[in-house]
Length: 275
Image (cartoon, rainbow, N blue to C red; front, side, top):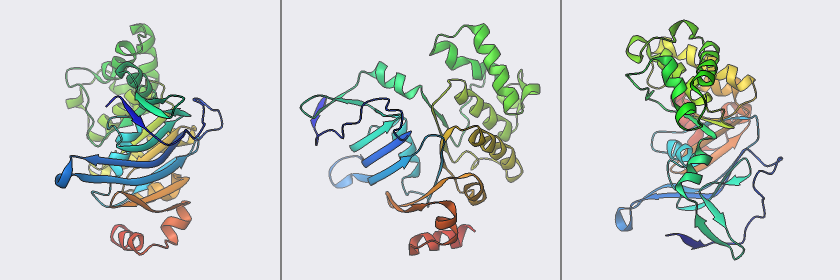
């Protein structure tokens, strides 16, 4: 459907400098139809300020990964709205309050400003670490191969892989592959970075090297939304912690409040199992 009647606009112009980097309002996501419909997100409201690190916790199936996928339009939302850097994702609203789905090329342009790192690394097996990081800037942004190579070398050095630039994924450990994936996402110079359980597929001894890169990224001022079960990372790095259950935010706030003095019984139960 190309147009949907919606309530009056919140009046926020695109690109408002003091807007939150991420703003979700009344966010719903339903998969399927009728009796078989699966209501994965149920009216999520969330703001992430610029330069902040938001960590999302919750049990499996609580909607955490779907929330991230709505933040970069890998999933089209069912209801509500998502703004990133003051710009509404996926739709434009006309003077009569009618939403129109954006052209796919415009949606792709919006998505290019949002980096995402998945549980699995999804590297191109036939390309070296350097070629993996160069690919999107050349193919999507039209950067020259020389400029893309220089930037890729800088980023691989930043994630501690300057000596692995000519290695193929099969020659890298899981932690090294995930660091290449982070460098690849950064190569597009994103305004926002999303991490979907980036250490869950790693052997325990490799987790630390990936978290160290993420901590460095947070310290540089990158806005980050991180789905993880790494409570230590949340306690040390997060500015804001969100706990989700059954598609809704149950509790949120500063790490000390959410992790050390949780008020909701469901969160208390969750922490008792993971700490």
